[in-house]
Image (cartoon, rainbow, N blue to C red; front, side, top):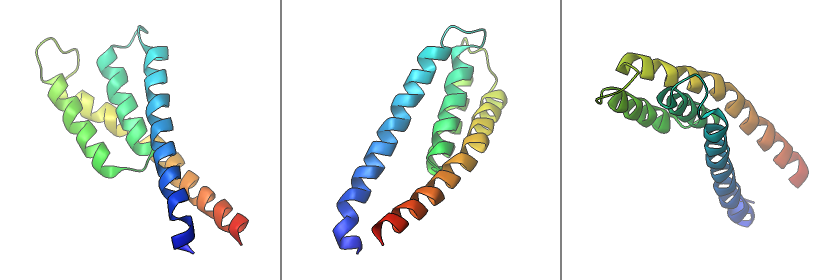
Length: 113
């Protein structure tokens, strides 16, 4: 069974990841210039994307990147604030990402059998 469907699983993984990346970029351009700083927006969006894809290594990398940007000169955020913003975005989106994977797998297995 998996031999027949492995190409579709790979394609679905690529499409979902690209769709998430494009949605994140679109959200940045929609939120860009609002009353929040771009650093806060990027920190939140990186947490949301890693949570929606249920990707814990990406979450850790996003926290490190946001903290290093916040530690730089001219930053409006502290490293702790940037870490918190990424964590909140991840926590909110993770639940929806996990439920989406379960529902997708349930629907896919029902349509195959």
